Image (cartoon, rainbow, N blue to C red):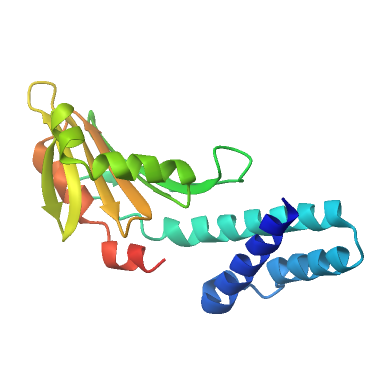
Amino acid sequence: MFANKISSLAVITACILTTPLLVRADDTVLKTIDEAVKQYKAGDYAEAASNLDYASQLVRQQKSENMKKLLPPPLSGWKAGETNAQAIGSAVLGGGVTVSRDYYKGNSKLSLEIVSDSPVLQSVLMMINNPMFAGAGGGKLETLNGQRSIIKYDSVKRSGDIYVVVASRFMVTVKGDGIDRTDLINLAKAVDYKQLSEN
């Protein structure tokens, strides 16, 4: 079990060394990892594991803050709500990072969510990559800005969903009520998928 923690330490350190945006002036993450290493060497495995978990959560929080910048501005004529970010520790469904934002125009509403780093996401990605799954729910496979996606739209209810798989690590979900199909698609297209895939 603890070997997994040490493996996590190596991954976290590698992420920090290769992603300058994660390193802040006070280097809280690095200090926490350094403390965990000292505790590990001293045989204090419980505290070392606790500090590694804490460092992992700090990295997720910093990543979520960076991902918030990738949520697009409102479409012309629309207004945007606050950006939200949530970093969930590995104890809850394996962990992960989620950022989201709602958009409004009169009685119309769109919402956009980006999920990454969740083990649960892998099973969802497998289903989305299966054309049979796409068709079963009334969706259609389409390509948006070079990305594979499933688009579902009900013209009677004027509501729909779009699911976009990015770099096999992210899922972008756009949902809308009281909207035209073009609104749904335009918001999905407004995401910078190239920059997202590099995160």
